[in-house]
Each structure stands twice: as C-alpha cells, then as structure tokens.
Image (cartoon, rainbow, N blue to C red):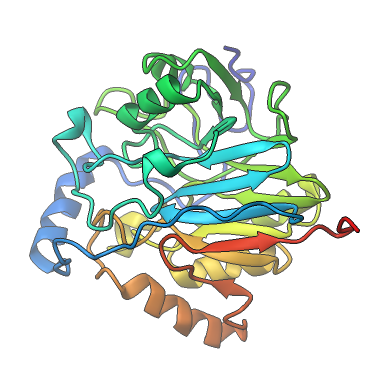
Length: 326
C-alpha cells in the first residue's frame, strides 16, 4: 500500500481530507443530528416487497447494469462481471446485528449472482463495505477488489486475497477491464477513532467503447466536470440520490436529488440512474422522498425522465456499444 505524498491536495500525512467545501461537521455534532433524526425523521415501513430477479444475458450489449439495492449494482461486461459496494446483509453496521435494518431485500439473491471478476469498493462505511458479504464473495468467487488507498487491510481481513488500492485518478493495473479511481467528496470511518485514515472515491469503468461512472458516496462539489475531462465522455452514470437530511449536517456527505441532477449536467448529461436510496434508513427523509424530489429536480432543470432514471429494484439497463457487433 502506498499513500499519496504529504503535499497531496487531499492527504496531510496522517489523514485524508476533501480539498474543497463543503466542510464536514465535527464528530461532536453527530449526537445532535441523531437526536434531530429521532424527533423529526419520517417513519419507514418495516419491509417493502422486492421480487427477486435473475440478471439478463449480456448479449451484444457493451454492458448490462442491474440495480440490486442501495449502492450495490451488477455491471456485466464481456471482460468480466463487476459488483459495486456489495451488501447482502440484513444490517448496515458492526457485527451484523447493529445499525440500520434492511427494508428491501437484495433484488438479485446472492446465489443468483453470475461469476464476479471484480468488486469496486468506494469506501469503508458499513453500508458500502460489508465484511460478511465480502467474505461470501471471497469463498464463492475469489474476485479482485479494487478500492481506495487505506482500505486494503480491512478488505483482506474478510479472506479476499487479491486487493488493489488506488488514489484518485489512478488506473487499475490488475483489473481485466480499464478502471480508473475518481474523486468524491465524503469521509471514511468504521469507529470514532479511525476517521479519514482511508480514502473514499468513485470509479470509471470502460466496457468496450463505453464508459460507466459509479460515483460511490459523495456530496456535491465542483469535481464532476473533472471526471469527464480526465476520463472522457461518460455513457452511463450511477449517482446517489438518498440519505441527505438534515441538510445542515448531510450536505457535506451526500448529495440531495437536486444536486444529483446538477452533477448529471456537470458530467455532460450522460444517461444516469439513481442509486443509494430506499434500502436502509440512514437519515431522516421518508423512503419515497428521494424519488419524488428527483422528479421535482428534473422539472426544475428541464431534464427528461428518460435521461435521469430511477430503476425498479432488480431492473436492468443495457448499454449498447457505439460500434455494435454485426
């Protein structure tokens, strides 16, 4: 594992940081946020039915992307299948017994996953880096895990043997398809004592002649245009739209739907799907608020529903190649 130089714009020699505003709230404000959420937060249902789906065949598409739930997506490509931020567990928290309870089950059951070649792991939060799911993936598929600098030890503790750590804008040397790590505006922590000891980010994956952007977890900041400039035109973007209230605390951590639409425009208006909603109640908005607020934001910015979609859980979108096979 190699850390960035001390004079990096996002690493001070001990901890990582976001190089631009908005600034993170201090840890001492977490109790206030939790009390506010308990007092004013919307009540979610205990469970929402999800019909399990079997991913479709790739066929002649450059890629097929299936929304499994939260930030877990299956990306099928000719070079190998990719799983993003996999969590098939019932709790997003320590030991599998603490933390928010799963409201929607994974739309693709673990046993129905196709062979997984690569796991893209954006950061170490419990709802994105689930040790139990990673251990199951290690036992069944032994995939390569591409993650951000500082997360290797945690990933290897699950039994995964092949782990590659990247800094922002670095390209994978081990993945069977081109993968570039991208900037995000977020933070990392598994405990109150390890804040920002590891990096967070997103990824751009090339599937044939198409580019797919998985943003990971991120607040809105002026870097989405840089993703396009550094990595090339994006054909499909997966942007988070949930877990954004209360804004005084969450605006430095997660985009709200209006900011997600702005990010979509900054990226050059690729085909975009919303992720990171409707699975775990992490913050105080209602379960349907992100989808409804996204519809309002599209109208405000004049973005067509077909341009920034919300997939049903288990629904897939095909990404056609620019030069399809005969």
